[in-house]
Amino acid sequence: MAKLIGYARVSTKGQSTDRQETDLLAAGVRRDDLYTDHGVSGARASRPAFDQALAALHNGDTLIVTTLDRLGRSTQHMLAFADQLRDRGAGLRVLNLGGGDVDTATPMGSMLFTIMAALAQMELEIKRERVTDSISKRRAAGQNLGGRPQRVTDSQIRSATRLVHAGDPVTQVARDLGMSRATFYRRSQALNT
Image 1 (cartoon, rainbow, N blue to C red):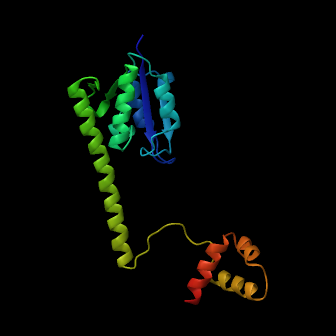
Image 2: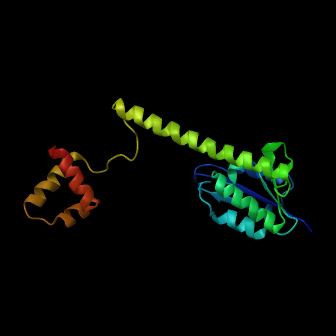
Image 3: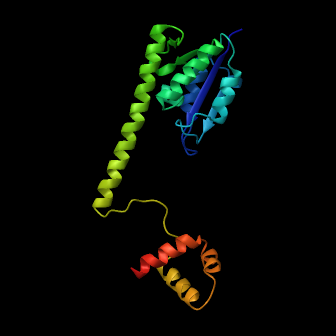
């Protein structure tokens, strides 16, 4: 008997798959046949729950996702995935495409899947371009780029530099500060510049 296999994914641990799961369950997926990845990028070809969902697919089964970008971002990976589905005799249903089945075995379904995969990849590339552009503009304007705040203050680096000049081993001083030797050297050199 053909089964409906559901797959949900979020890219960060702080995000929730609740909405995706609700939509998948409403589409007829049983809770036992629902696979979820938390904090896993769609750019990765291999994902733990995704791999389990694929292993659960058999001839005649249908994989259901809420949006195509839950499957991945790379057109190349998506097309390889379509081939895997075809080889297994399994179907694909994407809920945001009007809820219809995208049969990758038919020419029309294959074309639609290819176009949607290319659009998902284009969307990712546009986002990357915007982020890179934003960082460049913020750097040029001398603005803070965010990131992890420095735990070790400049005063602590100066004190540690005095210890090194007094003969303490650099490795030990850096370890006491909770950083690598390279980071210690870089930070102390930046203060002397």
